[in-house]
Length: 320
Image (cartoon, rainbow, N blue to C red):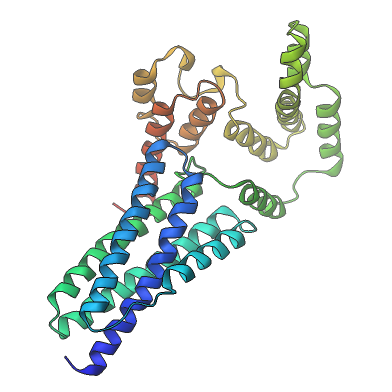
């Protein structure tokens, strides 16, 4: 193997090592955003697998006569921290696209390393490159699936941070066509403020003062959404009303009769999972998950629903 080829191979391995250290830290920061315990375990395993790949890359560099840069892991952690800070001001999809770009770069470099190692007749490095290609191909597919889940309205395997949710909402609001009169908006908001039926119903049921104090804020919000939907629909702004209904459904603020599964509250976990697997509309899956999380929050149901949506998203994205 020529010295030029050796130097090129070592340079690429060092680059992949730095990127892998960043990938490890990204996976660890994403753990807190996991929607389910299964996803949390998967991200934890990904971080550990990344550390094992980093060790293998370091060994390969040494075997080729090079020396891994000591500062690499530190730079990887720093890059991930800076990335996480920047993402707080980004919408959720932009943050995921950043992760996907990182994985694509790792995948492309791994393929280049395999070509270099093949020419250089370094079977151990070829085997390492194959391992990297397999790992990063899987991660690309996973991130593509999460993006497709988000495009379908969720629930995605990862939750938005509060900042990402706010950023995404702002962008959606800025892109909503102005198809409803200002007078109609004012009327809906005024009605929502002055006649919150859900809050009134809560008070009229004679709930305990302590319960009322805890529930007042969320009940007022939910009441405002329900009232706004009713008023906007009555005003003929069906598009806006549908958007408000989607917001209610996304927050689990729907009545049992509005769910796409009959008698949902009476179903046990196995029955609910079986019914969810029959749903084909992502919006229906999203509505059930939001309702479940807002009420009983049975993790087996939420996990199964998210897995089912992932399957739908993979078909939409052409991943399988």
